[in-house]
Image (cartoon, rainbow, N blue to C red; front, top):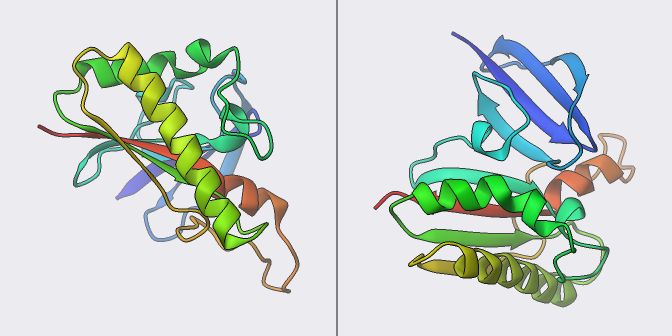
Amino acid sequence: MRRAAAVLCAGALVVTSAPAAAASPAAVVDVRPDVRDVVATVLDVRPEVVDVAPRTDEGVEIVLGADVLFAFGSADLPLGVDELLAGVVERAAAAPGRIVVAGHTDGIGDDASNQVLSEQRARAVSDYLGQRVPGAQVESAGFGETRPLVPELTPAGDDDPAARAVNRRVTITLEDA
Protein backbone atom coordinates (compact mmCIF):
# COMPACT_ATOMS: atom_id res chain seq x y z
CA MET A 1 0.00 0.00 0.00
CA ARG A 2 1.28 3.47 -0.86
CA ARG A 3 0.53 6.53 1.24
CA ALA A 4 1.23 10.20 1.05
CA ALA A 5 3.03 11.96 3.85
CA ALA A 6 3.28 15.70 4.27
CA VAL A 7 5.51 17.89 6.38
CA LEU A 8 4.64 21.58 6.49
CA CYS A 9 7.80 23.38 7.53
CA ALA A 10 9.02 26.96 7.06
CA GLY A 11 6.37 27.73 4.46
CA ALA A 12 7.07 24.77 2.17
CA LEU A 13 5.07 21.58 1.92
CA VAL A 14 7.15 18.48 1.30
CA VAL A 15 4.96 15.74 -0.15
CA THR A 16 6.05 12.13 -0.41
CA SER A 17 4.46 9.11 -1.99
CA ALA A 18 6.19 5.88 -1.07
CA PRO A 19 5.60 2.57 0.66
CA ALA A 20 4.81 3.13 4.31
CA ALA A 21 8.18 1.74 5.41
CA ALA A 22 10.37 3.93 3.20
CA ALA A 23 9.01 7.38 2.39
CA SER A 24 11.32 9.83 0.60
CA PRO A 25 10.64 13.43 -0.52
CA ALA A 26 9.00 13.57 -3.96
CA ALA A 27 8.09 17.23 -4.35
CA VAL A 28 8.28 20.57 -2.58
CA VAL A 29 5.32 22.89 -3.05
CA ASP A 30 4.96 26.45 -1.70
CA VAL A 31 1.90 26.88 0.52
CA ARG A 32 0.28 29.62 2.55
CA PRO A 33 2.60 30.66 5.40
CA ASP A 34 -0.06 30.57 8.13
CA VAL A 35 0.39 26.89 9.12
CA ARG A 36 3.87 25.40 9.45
CA ASP A 37 5.71 22.43 10.88
CA VAL A 38 2.72 20.10 10.77
CA VAL A 39 3.74 16.46 10.53
CA ALA A 40 0.95 14.25 9.25
CA THR A 41 0.02 11.22 7.23
CA VAL A 42 -2.72 12.20 4.81
CA LEU A 43 -4.28 11.19 1.52
CA ASP A 44 -5.64 14.63 0.57
CA VAL A 45 -2.90 17.25 1.00
CA ARG A 46 -4.27 20.78 1.33
CA PRO A 47 -2.66 23.47 3.54
CA GLU A 48 -5.47 23.73 6.08
CA VAL A 49 -5.02 22.42 9.63
CA VAL A 50 -8.33 20.57 9.43
CA ASP A 51 -7.13 18.70 6.32
CA VAL A 52 -3.82 17.42 7.69
CA ALA A 53 -4.87 16.22 11.13
CA PRO A 54 -4.35 12.45 11.36
CA ARG A 55 -6.47 10.15 13.50
CA THR A 56 -4.74 8.46 16.45
CA ASP A 57 -6.04 5.88 18.95
CA GLU A 58 -7.14 8.79 21.17
CA GLY A 59 -8.77 10.93 18.46
CA VAL A 60 -7.54 13.56 16.01
CA GLU A 61 -4.05 14.98 16.54
CA ILE A 62 -3.02 18.41 15.27
CA VAL A 63 0.66 19.38 15.47
CA LEU A 64 1.60 23.05 15.25
CA GLY A 65 5.14 24.38 15.11
CA ALA A 66 6.01 26.43 18.18
CA ASP A 67 8.03 28.77 15.94
CA VAL A 68 4.78 29.81 14.26
CA LEU A 69 2.86 30.37 17.48
CA PHE A 70 5.52 31.85 19.74
CA ALA A 71 8.55 34.13 19.68
CA PHE A 72 11.83 32.62 20.90
CA GLY A 73 11.65 31.83 24.62
CA SER A 74 8.10 33.21 24.90
CA ALA A 75 4.73 31.70 25.78
CA ASP A 76 2.72 34.74 24.62
CA LEU A 77 0.45 34.07 21.65
CA PRO A 78 0.97 36.55 18.79
CA LEU A 79 -1.59 39.13 17.60
CA GLY A 80 -2.46 37.05 14.49
CA VAL A 81 -3.28 33.91 16.48
CA ASP A 82 -6.98 33.97 15.50
CA GLU A 83 -6.05 33.44 11.84
CA LEU A 84 -3.41 30.85 12.72
CA LEU A 85 -5.75 28.77 14.88
CA ALA A 86 -9.08 29.27 13.06
CA GLY A 87 -9.02 25.73 11.64
CA VAL A 88 -8.15 24.27 15.03
CA VAL A 89 -11.03 26.13 16.72
CA GLU A 90 -13.43 24.98 13.99
CA ARG A 91 -12.33 21.36 14.31
CA ALA A 92 -12.39 21.48 18.14
CA ALA A 93 -15.90 22.97 18.20
CA ALA A 94 -17.11 20.01 16.13
CA ALA A 95 -15.33 17.44 18.34
CA PRO A 96 -17.44 15.74 21.00
CA GLY A 97 -14.67 14.95 23.48
CA ARG A 98 -11.91 16.41 25.58
CA ILE A 99 -9.13 18.61 24.14
CA VAL A 100 -5.58 17.89 25.32
CA VAL A 101 -2.83 20.40 24.53
CA ALA A 102 0.82 19.33 24.92
CA GLY A 103 3.83 21.62 24.68
CA HIS A 104 7.28 20.45 23.53
CA THR A 105 10.65 22.18 23.19
CA ASP A 106 13.90 21.30 21.49
CA GLY A 107 16.98 20.22 23.42
CA ILE A 108 18.68 23.63 23.51
CA GLY A 109 18.78 25.11 27.01
CA ASP A 110 18.48 23.47 30.39
CA ASP A 111 15.86 20.85 31.19
CA ALA A 112 14.08 22.90 33.87
CA SER A 113 13.66 25.99 31.66
CA ASN A 114 12.43 23.88 28.73
CA GLN A 115 9.93 22.12 30.98
CA VAL A 116 8.50 25.41 32.28
CA LEU A 117 8.36 26.94 28.77
CA SER A 118 6.56 23.89 27.34
CA GLU A 119 3.99 24.02 30.17
CA GLN A 120 3.43 27.75 29.66
CA ARG A 121 2.98 27.36 25.90
CA ALA A 122 0.55 24.45 26.32
CA ARG A 123 -1.41 26.46 28.87
CA ALA A 124 -1.55 29.52 26.57
CA VAL A 125 -3.02 27.44 23.73
CA SER A 126 -5.41 25.56 26.02
CA ASP A 127 -6.65 28.83 27.56
CA TYR A 128 -7.15 30.23 24.04
CA LEU A 129 -9.15 27.18 22.94
CA GLY A 130 -11.14 27.12 26.19
CA GLN A 131 -12.27 30.71 25.53
CA ARG A 132 -13.32 29.99 21.94
CA VAL A 133 -14.84 26.50 22.10
CA PRO A 134 -18.02 26.65 24.22
CA GLY A 135 -18.30 23.89 26.81
CA ALA A 136 -14.90 22.41 25.94
CA GLN A 137 -13.02 20.40 28.53
CA VAL A 138 -9.44 21.50 27.81
CA GLU A 139 -6.34 20.17 29.56
CA SER A 140 -2.69 21.08 29.10
CA ALA A 141 0.66 19.46 29.81
CA GLY A 142 4.27 20.31 29.05
CA PHE A 143 6.92 17.76 28.19
CA GLY A 144 9.97 19.98 27.68
CA GLU A 145 12.54 18.23 25.53
CA THR A 146 11.60 14.68 26.65
CA ARG A 147 9.54 13.66 23.58
CA PRO A 148 11.40 14.69 20.42
CA LEU A 149 9.95 13.66 17.07
CA VAL A 150 13.38 13.46 15.41
CA PRO A 151 17.02 13.35 16.58
CA GLU A 152 18.57 16.82 16.86
CA LEU A 153 22.02 15.67 15.79
CA THR A 154 23.09 14.55 12.33
CA PRO A 155 24.67 11.10 11.94
CA ALA A 156 28.05 12.91 12.05
CA GLY A 157 27.13 14.38 15.46
CA ASP A 158 26.51 17.95 14.26
CA ASP A 159 23.63 20.11 15.43
CA ASP A 160 20.59 19.95 13.12
CA PRO A 161 18.58 23.23 13.37
CA ALA A 162 15.82 21.91 11.10
CA ALA A 163 15.33 18.90 13.37
CA ARG A 164 15.22 21.15 16.42
CA ALA A 165 12.50 23.22 14.69
CA VAL A 166 10.40 20.07 14.16
CA ASN A 167 10.70 19.20 17.86
CA ARG A 168 9.48 22.66 18.97
CA ARG A 169 5.75 22.14 18.77
CA VAL A 170 2.34 22.21 20.39
CA THR A 171 0.19 19.13 19.89
CA ILE A 172 -3.58 19.37 20.18
CA THR A 173 -5.48 16.09 20.54
CA LEU A 174 -9.23 16.18 20.03
CA GLU A 175 -10.24 13.06 21.92
CA ASP A 176 -13.22 10.95 21.00
CA ALA A 177 -16.13 11.11 23.43
